[in-house]
Length: 201
Image (cartoon, rainbow, N blue to C red; front, top):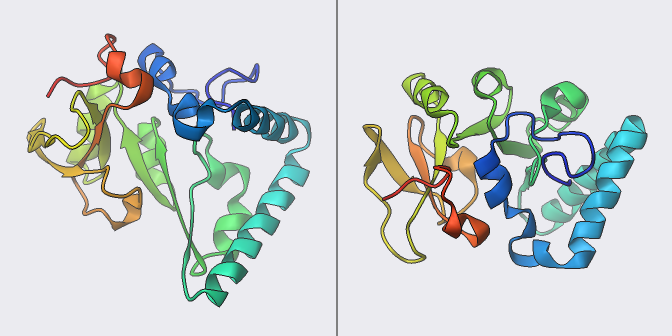
């Protein structure tokens, strides 16, 4: 979906100026006009007919599960690629319907949501929520932190006294141990960040 308020409605209600500026929306293939047009189209459909959008999402998850089973694999679903919506409230039926058949996970900047959601959520640290990030870690949750570290260079061993794991090795956050900092190397526009969104290593 189109991030932040690009669609005219904010799909990232806890976003900060730093994360908006550094958003991965235009990273990699996201820079192609076709990808941006596709996100805009899906976002318009989400706003225009929520029930139909969820029905389509349901269909695509079911199709993915069937394909994965034929290949002897499992399905993981990350609904918020470039948004931060509370899907457990928007489409709770998907989680109950596919429990055991698919693994859902996401990132969020909503600390309260990270603590109570029924699926795996990694809290995203930004320049405006250090206190919330510390609270999530203290309660045993995980926090993603972008560091000013070049590709291939080692990440800091700790942040705020908590161990840092390499989040660039894979994106399957539900496999991470609990109570850790998921270290991510600044990418794309984030490499030029001056807001504090990216932490100096």
